[in-house]
Amino acid sequence: MEEIDQIYQENILDHYKNPRNFGKIMNATVHHHEKNPLCGDELDVYFLIDDDQNIADVKIYGHGCAISQSSASMLTDKVKGKSIDEIKKLKKDDILEMLGIPISAARLKCALLSFDTFKNAITIFEKYIKEPGVKGKR
Amino acid sequence: MVQTKTVLNTEQIRKDFPILSRKIHKNKQLIYFDSAATSQKPKQVIDAMDFYYKNYNANIHRSIHQLGEEATAKYEEAHEKVAEFINADSYENIIFTKNTTESLNLLAYSLTANLKKGDEIVISQMEHHSNFVPWQQLAEQRRLKLGFIKIDGKGNLDKKSINENITKKTKIVSLTHASNVLGTINPIKEIAKIAHENGAVMVVDGAQSVPHMPVDVRQLDADFLAFSGHKMLGPTGIGVLYGKKELLEEMQPFLYGGEMINEVTFKYTTFNQLPWKFEAGTMNIAEAVGLSAAIDYLKKIEMENIRNHDKELADYAMAKLKEISWITTYGPKERGAVISFNVRGVHAHDVAQILDSEGIAVRAGHHCCMPLMGVLKVPATARASFYLYNTEKEIDNFIGALYKVKKIFGV
Image (cartoon, rainbow over all chains, first blue to last red; front, side):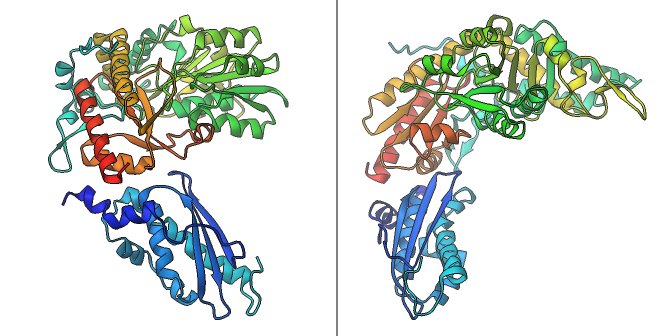
């Protein structure tokens, strides 16, 4: 298989064209937006976090290249139902492993936009929003 | 009407550019369609710089030895060659800088130094960040007003907007001669006339025009012209600022230090004559030698021929792209050798990556024109840009590779 076909594998293109958990959560516990101005990639993430600090629901909304958008779509599947602590433990390498395709230095930012967005959303939640028993404060 | 024969002997020209025989991704022949970002260099330029370092490398201007004298002569000769190339009066009008960006920063600082609060600067929606950010920042610092000439639906400067923006309050008009995104060639001569009638100076960003077409500062009546060596077959690290003598003489230097001075005392400093007043510190001497060699090369081929060749390639590529329903192109029909485009439903970065896998180097992104991307309502475009060494056959291969993008993404 040519390297280019290794990058644009069927599952990458499938996630790009049919992103999972795409949309918005109106009563989200936390919503965060990140962009990569250099590429024009944009991503919003919405987390609904339950009293046990688990991700009850997640939605993404955005546009960008196949790498950034498929990475975000795959990551929603990965974090749904997981605890906040588990998300905090995620490393960049986990994202690259999840994608499972060769990522050149130039595309690393694309691949990791979702990771940064998700992580920063959790940071914001922990820093400003987290109050056990109070939901949808933001 | 698309011609199939170009005016240039590209086969012969390509032999002068060693890099063009490179293979990409193991066995793909390089097709270099990114000359608007930086051009490739002919061996004549590489050899001239190599010869300088091997034979007469020395610091210029005050060396009382033969190497220094030889280096000084070549460095000064480079100013004369540039002056002749753009039909300037003399070497005194030619200031060497790092690149177009530095030339424009020099102007943004020096020209706004004496402006008053409320004075106006006019640029346009299609400016590169290098002709945008310096004016925006200086306008903010010095409380000046910054106006933007709009572009029309075709990607030309809107005539009505030109007249609305340039008024008696305008002190500086700074516009690109040729857009690095849309390919638009702006009517600088007409706009310079309007600027002058209103008492403003006309600054021209020639980064995309000087390498690709005959540019005559007297014919344009430009007060200032900025361009880069590396986009016109020369090395990186050398740029040019042309200015009218009377204006340069009035201006404060932008950078202070060695060589730009006449006399330095504990109390005061007097500045050197033009153009050295604006060239502080040890300059890029080898790069000036390289730029000289690049100009020799371009002159031998003749800028008129390069313009015609560029135009043929652009027309040829546009005709082919227009036939493809899933491709959108941007900009007017009459254009420089730059074509921005998008493939339906595919981000420009993905397009560039797939083209690269076929050995084709294009650019993808905002092309340092974020405000323009906003006007075009796209996050990014892919851009193919051509130069004297490109061929119609390469364009055919490029079109073929676009079908690979289509296939992979199922457009």
